[in-house]
Length: 177
Figure: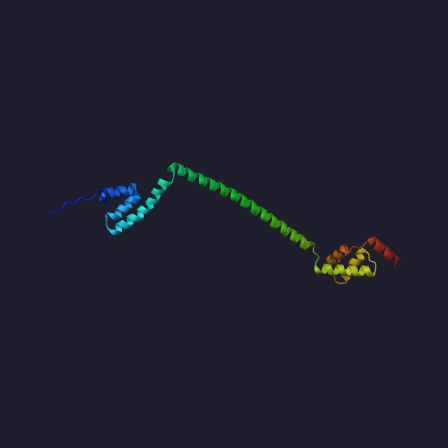
């Protein structure tokens, strides 16, 4: 004979399903206490209910309606977009300034390198000073002498332009000789 065993309401399937929907943490506990369904089914439902419970608990304790949450998310996205745009503009300006500074530094280095005399120009200048200390020369005569010594026209011209000679004085000395 069948015995009518009275099952408490909280162990009935319909109550456990409602508890899982409306109060997921309690439904999860009841699912395991009442041992409804097989173990595999309970594990699968547990995983699903854990994720559902996180959403349910965050909505419960989140402190606001979903509309204000959506507004917060939208405001956060707008703010982060504005900050990103401002940061991008600042980054762009900084990159442009760095590029301009680098170009200026490269140009200054190129000018400095161009203004630096070559070894041949330095040697020609030293030789021009030696000649001027020994005897008087005209501008073109000193260039010719340095070219005769084997310096190029550019090196000889650099040396004569930068030797610091007073050509009027040199002409007077030449006239006395």
